[in-house]
Amino acid sequence: MPERGLARSLVEAYVYFDLAAGGEAGASRRAVVEQDAEGWVVRLGATEVLVPEEAEVVARQAGLIFGSGLSELIDPGQWVLIAATYASRALEGALFFAADPSGSEAFGKVETDWRFAADAVAEALKFFPGGAAELPPDTFWSEMGRALRESEPHRLTRQKLESDLAFYRQSLDDFRLLHDR
Image (cartoon, rainbow, N blue to C red; front, side, top):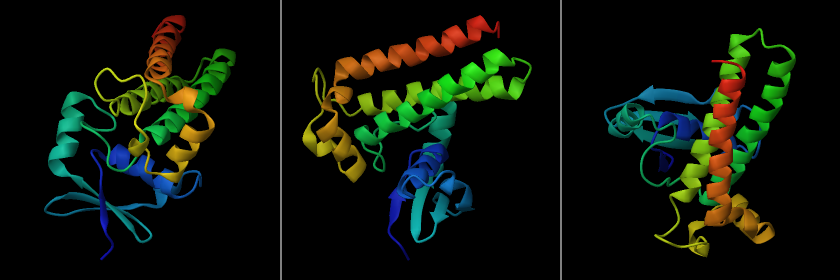
């Protein structure tokens, strides 16, 4: 049996599978979910992730998309890249929605993308030690996260991430206000 990763929510497990598939769009859609005594086991190929039932319940009750506590699957560099991806989708979707605001499904997609972008940045911020302006090198365990830290360290400061978080949240509020929803 393959070694299991541990996710804090089903959404985190699916995001992890999309990352683990090396950027293959929608790879997580091929994942298989089974419930067992511990919670949900999500499988894609030889990779398994366990989402304990209690963790998923806590995430849902608290309205936390990715779960409570620190991720053991996704490092802060990856969270920053995830946030940028969702923000890019939200910006593009908002432009298309502005051109044709008739679709409520399109509105919901933009809204979700802004929320996911903000929540992904919030996940990265969880890795900062109290009062620290920068993340310690050992918080980056993925190749993707270490590469971002090496090539663009300015994207990983507390100040930058707090600014991004405020921007994403304000963009969501502005989008809702602009379209009166």
